[in-house]
Length: 117
Length: 110
Image 1 (cartoon, rainbow over the protein chains, first blue to last red):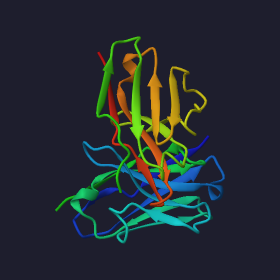
Image 2 (cartoon, chains in turn brown, blue):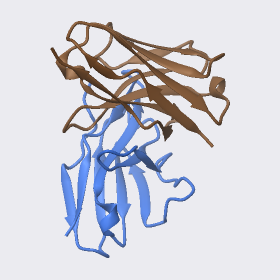
Image 3 (cartoon, one colour):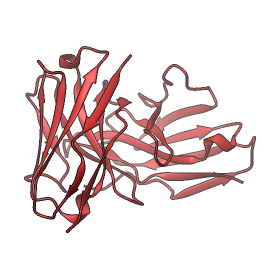
Image 4 (cartoon, one colour):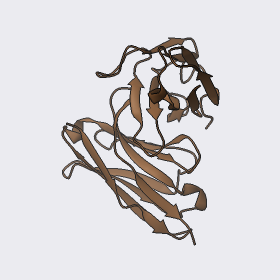
């Protein structure tokens, strides 16, 4: 079955960088677009970024554009989110989710990013 | 980017029905499919509805979705205590080239 496992979260100081990974299994990864979605403490779901199945297109939320980069390695079945210039407001649980048409049909368990000095 | 508009909360007694609205615009709901997600704190968001009104396998028919123009609605009938959660609508915005989530609606079973 579809399995998505995020990793790379942790405590990081404001202004520093962090790279999240999402390991995919149970499906043909290279055939699917992938999203990153986050939820800050006490807040709702916020979409972060999406990447097309082949990496040809990438789109970002205004709040992260220019600071975050989504990428993928289809040979490793892995999705990435490079997060630079982190701010306190980036603190959240980050989920990766598979894109199936116009829905997110499978989600990982999430990884916590804590931005704190 | 503006989120889609949902009521912050709805409530009803066990066995009753609730509906959750999701209001958008011509570039998002009016042009693309809507999906709905159930999220309990500390758990993984669960897809409930896709392509406006379709249920993934395993989702009971107590959950239904509809769309009209630039608005969508999630209905939950036969409300159960296990339905207490936050519910989010989502869709793609073709003008912004961005995914949109609603602000979320907390369902409380009285």
